[in-house]
Length: 354
Ligand code: PMV
Image 1: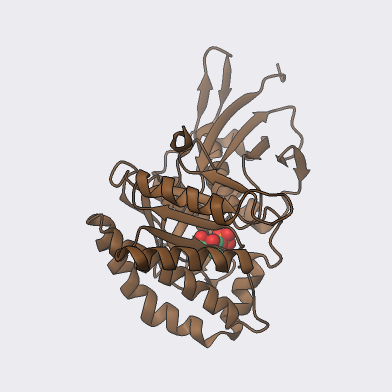
Image 2: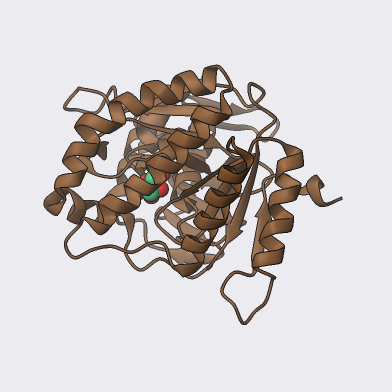
């Protein structure tokens, strides 16, 4: 009868940009003003877990984020749902005796249950993992046969950075040239095994929600910042090539220099926006100074830092030994304390403290 439910679950890690995406040339389709490059985190740590369900008993599409119902009426959700639905195929579950024909998907509704195992909207790219996971789970449920790159272009319409979470390892979001966005998609540069010496540590400076959303921040930057024009035209194209080389050669010196410079330029572009946008705070600045001093005293960079649209720092250590030393320094200079704002460390690699 009409009582069946069919489900699919996906788990998707977040990604951290080492060459930042900031600024859209098309807000509707989410097309960026420059290419970006990111590293996808280990799926067991910062990730979104999404279960999607379909049943003839569901009367409308509904979604819960972290157990609270949220509205699906926004264009971003609607675009992802529409794009996936239009590519749905026949689905058959012989065990349960369920058969859904391709044409039935237009009439069926879905329930979406999504959960982040880390602070939402605190500049830890929760939307990246979220939309990538949603698109991937829906594509599985609806037997969509497109490859990862095509799916990435759909996830992009949910949140730009989400397109890069469809792959592990190092990923480039190619801005594309087409007006319809069909070539604005993610490409894997190297898989997760390519450079597995790196250890990523996230120092959560504040788990509060950011004040300026990336959408409104980018819009204001595009409208007012001359530095963004220079960055997008003159700086990023060269940096992307240099970063691809650094990744290919596992060249940590270049990788760290490019990563830190690009984070700093992104925050400079925010400051060049009118009114200026401040994502980093004093603690963020102190972490930058600590890393800069340490790298200088060692002669060669040991750690790279990067900050997204929030004060939390993402620190990339060249290897495990450096990561242990970094943690010791962080704990020494910023002892976990509810009175200070820096009080938790989320590790990219749990076993490091054992
Ligand atoms: O995809 P959004 O709208 O959450 O924008 C992400 C922007 C940054 O995280 C600051 C940079 C990036 O490339 O991920």
